[in-house]
Length: 379
Image 1 (tube, rainbow, N blue to C red):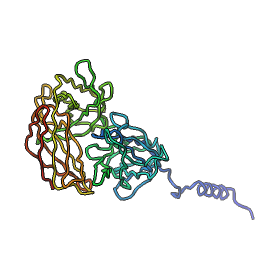
Image 2: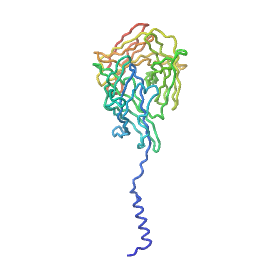
Image 3: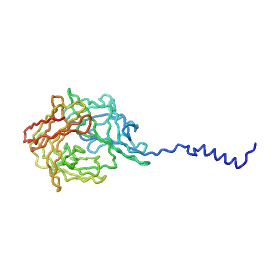
Image 4: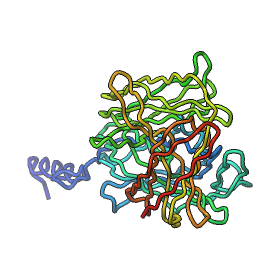
């Protein structure tokens, strides 16, 4: 049987089209983007070390379906990740372009640095290491957008005001709170704390925002290094930040001051220096909070003062913030190394990592060498 030349040509063309997936039957190439994940932390007042181990990280675009982004299998000291020292926990990885609204960390049950150490532990300042009770997973909110054929970096930043809470019987619990930021939409504030030419190390510095009602909220915190330098990274752009600190020592302390406000209009590095002078003999304050925190709650105390903020006037800002110590019939939070003066007292409590409830107390006078006490009841 002989084929007509034209029919043979059409048949070959049809076969070629079918084999190449023509006619709408092909599997289109899925566009991909690349996502890098960094991991950082605020400073943790009252602790010299806070060691945690990470197993893996997942992402979600809808809060329900989770996509594995990669295994981390690493152990970190959170105190080494503050002051601008975040680390890459997942290098550039091909992912589906999308807006990732949430990220989920699975905490490891092994220590990847040392087989003989606990996978999570804390070392209170001046104390011995204690086992840190960890959740199985932690979810932080985004959003971080990965463009098609482009790249993005997500910064998972843990919040320091309630990360570690001491519990009854010497138990230390990890209250994993944080958020994920698109690094391409964040600003950084760097600066120096000193008394004349003398750098001040170990000073906890805050970057705060103030809302329309005048309420200040800490957005980032860091402790100055041996040279008195600090870095407050992972700050959302488009906000006005007030940078403040109060050097606290056992024999001398300084009154809190604030730098001129920083208008973080873009993804840049801004400068805010803190120049202290006239050290004073410190006092202290203890706040008692009732009822005691439940195991699902994180509670912290704050001291506020009206500070001059450059030529823009003054603001009521947070000058000290500490987590409570539980284990008694009431919670307690202690502030040592306070410069003499009057402080406004607030306490915040978050249940199951939800939005915190704030309770405001009275103004408390701290005298040189004295110890002030006050109490609050909070839901």
